[in-house]
Length: 273
Image (cartoon, helix red, strand yellow):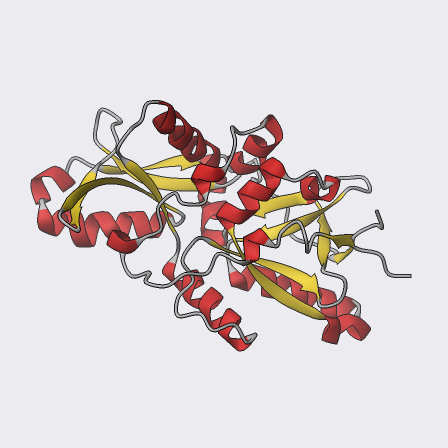
C-alpha cells in the first residue's frame, strides 16, 4: 500500500511567491520574504550549511558593495550568487569593464547559504542599509517560469530562487531518497530542474505504474526557509536542500574525499505518518 509524506499545506506559501520583472542583477529580488523569517534554529542552519553561495571580496575579505539609483534613491547591494560561474561572469563581464583596476583586485569567495542567512540577520540588528541579495541561476529561473506556465499558471517571470521537487499529483506527497545507512528517507529539493527530472525518471523506471501520477513542483527557496523555521509539521524536517551539480563538484574539489551530499538513489514514497 502506498504511503507518503504530505506537505502540501505546509509548503503552500512556498509555491505562491511568483512576481514579475526579473532581469539582471539590478532587478534581482531583495529580502522581502527572508525578513519575515525568525532567528534560525540549529537544524535550519544545518540544512542551509550544505549549500554553497558565492560573492565577490577584496584582498581584505570585504564584500563588494554596488550602488545604484532607484527612483532617485541610492541603493547599496551585495550580491551572493547561487552559481560560482555566474559570480565569475559578473566579475569578468561587468566589473572589469566598469572599473578594471578595482576588478583586478577582486576574487570570487565561497560561503554557505547559512553564512548568507546569518549575515542578513546581523545586518538587520545593526539597521544596515545594505541589501544582501541572492542571485539565482537564470537558466533555472527560465525553467521554473516555463514549468509554471505549462501547468496553467500565468507567470511572466519567476522572481526568487527556484527549487524543483519531484512529487505525486495525488495527496500532495513527495518522493524520498536515502542519505545514509538505515531506514531514514528525505525529501530532496533541487536547485536544478535537471536533477529533479533525473530522479523522477529513475523512479518511473522502477515503478512504471506510478509514472502518470508524478510531476515536478516549483517552489521558492525563501518560502521553504520560512516553512523550515516556522512549521510545526514534523515532516518538514525531512526536507534537504540539494546543491546543484556545479556546486557539488566545487565542494568535492575542495575536499576530494568528502561528498557534500548523497547521490540521489532509490527514490520512493515516504513512510506513512
